[in-house]
Image (cartoon, rainbow, N blue to C red; front, side, top):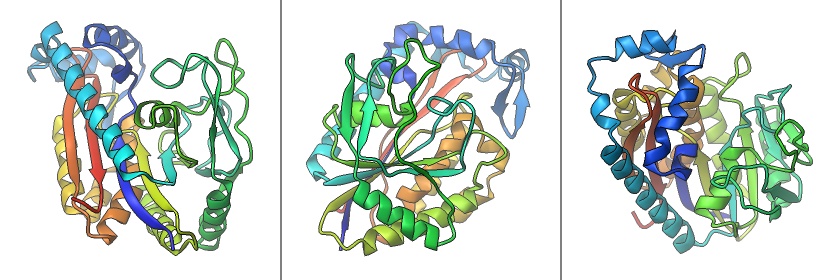
Length: 327
């Protein structure tokens, strides 16, 4: 049977591809957003800035502080990359989502890539892909096995035979969603093992799976992997999280403590309005968490650092987590 040797949860923020000195540039995009999610409700940017005016965020926006936090994130990524290379998986299951990068007009609740090749490169930003087109290997054997297992377990999947050609980015090109490109580039150093991308629409209502549905999916996925009649070593990586596009350190600490104690019920009781925008990617973590919990592994918090880009507290809680048999 297959053996799970590694679990990871990694943010994929574009801030990680920039020096701290340039983070405020991303904040200009936040100021133009009509809706920002924070504390279970929607806010305009001026409303949010007023609400958080006394939270000491300005001190976290100084150039020195931004550069310090960027350095911590860079060091955490180095450690995540080291752990990936040290555990030498033969195949990797990557859980992410499409943020209207390959499908600007549709958003399936659950999908799996069963094709052979994974193209990437321009027009991705450098943090998500190399300067020239590349083709990474997929693992159709495992993907088709998982698709059949999950279908038999009452999960209706969209089967992606080939990545749709991106036509709306300039210039057009063949890319994977940035959730996957970040992993291939920053964790696998553009030399990935064969992988199976699984997409879960955590982002766009009304087809977002609830946390409990994501939890049920995690149970089925784990059962499938450990029953796979193969001697290959498997890694499971969740791409995304923690709180963003508004950083909420209090909620991040709830997440982190729940990860440490494998308190799935506590995570399920968090209001679904907190699992919105980028924070919704925490639902992808549950597949890694469930597998680690079943195997008795300890949650290793490689690092956590909240990174801000405006006085309203927009930015991202950067959490880096790993699970291995050696912990």
